[in-house]
Amino acid sequence: MDKVSEKVRELFVKSFHLEPDEVTDEADLQRDLEMDSTEVVELVVALEQEFEIKITDGEITNRQKFGDVVQTIRSKLVS
Amino acid sequence: MKKIAITGMGIIAPPGTDKVGFWQNLVSGKSFISPITRFDAAAYPSQIAGQIAEVDTSYLSPRLLKKMDRFSVLALVATEKALQDAGVDLSQEDPYATGIFLGNALGGWLYAETELRDLYVEGRAGVSPYMASAWFPAAPQGQVSIHYGIKGHSKTVISDKASALMAIGHAANIVGKRKLKFALAGGTEAPVTPYALLCCSTEGSLSRGPYRPFDKERDGFVVGEGAAVIVLEDAELARQRGATIHGLITGFATSCDGAHRIMPDPEGKGLIKAISAALARADYKTDEIDYISADGIATQVGDISEAKAIKNVFGPRGRKIPVSAPKSTFGHLLGAAGAVDLVITVLAMQQGSIPPTTNYQTPDAECDLDYVVNGCREHEIKKALIISRGRGGVNTVLTVERSQ
Image (cartoon, rainbow over all chains, first blue to last red; front, side):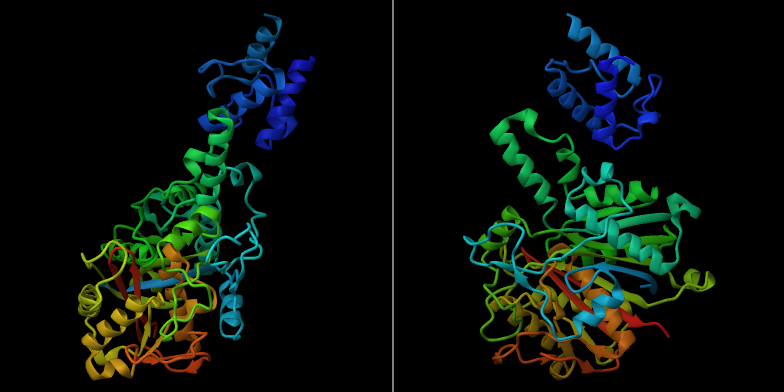
């Protein structure tokens, strides 16, 4: 597991009171982690602060999987 | 009106967080109004309130709790207690056969105030995304319906301090038409916050203390926080399932004064109409009522107009019916007050004892009813009338009778 993935997972666990083993790469934010759109807003703000990046509207949604979110962050960090 | 059974009662208020403890404390003679400790109230004319020391939310997830204002939390807690009291497991019931009817007067101001401060200080990014769904008046209805999977006819009622009693009246009407098997009904309020208290202060009706309805020296009410929810069922169906029936709702009416933006009609004309209509719907004669739970707002015109209306409807007997406003012990729960008054009235019927209006010292010649003051009065109650009034001239009246 890389550091980005680990940090994002920690953030999910802390922000939404999830168990670490629930937050797999294949976990669907809405279906598996029961995240609604307002929780996605909280997530985006937390990610922006944690990684000092800018996430635009619609880049992260609750129709994505955890692995998709990690990939989005990773791509922003290398660019 | 068809008689509707009260089969469950849940309460969380300054005197207690279950109905047994609530009653014991209410009749103990102690006051549950104290200096405000949640924030610095030094600049406010009224610096006292009825506050709940501790709310047990251990069965609710932290993920949910951070999305709710206190008024939704109190509604959830009271609902759970009511359902337990009724012995109803909603997971085993048709979700479309249960509804939730909740009143409140202010909305979720603790959440709103802190987030609005962040909005102005930090800008848009500083505001919690949960603000939008936490503060608004229908939030408690939403949270309760989500928590229990309720999908039937439901309603949030905003009629200032008459909200809860009006919500219960509407719920009873819907159950009477057999549109629902169960209606959860009541009110919730969390007004001990800087802005909410400021709004109550500028209305000009808040007391510097003590809260003393009907007393000649009265200077307004004191706010309190809490929630009360009852479970309503068709009486016949409730008996069939073997439910304990605590009391029966038999009449309900409401009217509007159309007189002043805050104060009631000084002659109580609208209230006269509401009391008369509620008695007619219950098919009661005026000599059948043996207790009146008063609004007791403790403003000059509020208490006098209420006394005038009672005397107008009940004639000479109006001075002989015991009247009380026990909310003087723990504060006015605003949009939850009517539900609390109903729970107290039902408990008073069961106990054969009327809790008093406290802090009463100086009689007022214009408030000349048989007020129960400063100590409980043993009294058999078979049929009672509850009055709840709101700013702008809202009058709501409910009749309730003891279950045989």
